[in-house]
Image 1: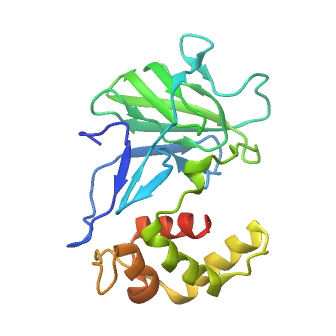
Image 2: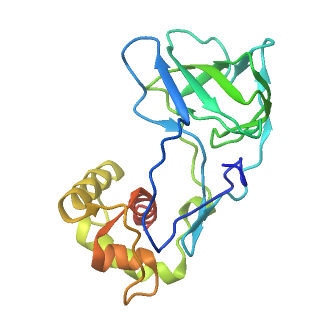
Length: 231
């Protein structure tokens, strides 16, 4: 967060144990009792050797409607849910965590904002703590058609991924069925651990996770899911 406030890459290690922290990164306050099921922050396209990178997703200035209001989709902005997110910006820049289907923001201490096709919100100037009220529509369709980099699989991981995919679903299964089968596969055959795994006898950490150890932390589950669904 300090050395790379825009989170241009994500890397997971292979030694030691993930460390918990007592630091408060976000405070989320819904308008009612309903909290968004997830908040989106960074977005990545290309994977290789335990590192995800954000490639070819240029940013442009977000639309400033008033001194404190930013539009993420064209108006009108009606019947939207509301949630306030208080977020630490130690360098007065970084990425905003937001509901994936946000349509506008009201943020008095946010001064310069950019966005890209993936919906990532890049803060270029702000107060050290940003309080943003997001207006969002849970059922709003915000999927961007994938480009070549969204479908790329590293050659050195392809054989293992194909082997695992063949045990989970049929090639002609619809995407929704593949998602259901993938969730069931991980829930029934894998376990979560904070202990970082090594490569074992395999060529990569991901291969060891999928084919042997079958245990890992969230980045491994997310990486395996994204790449399996690309097969």
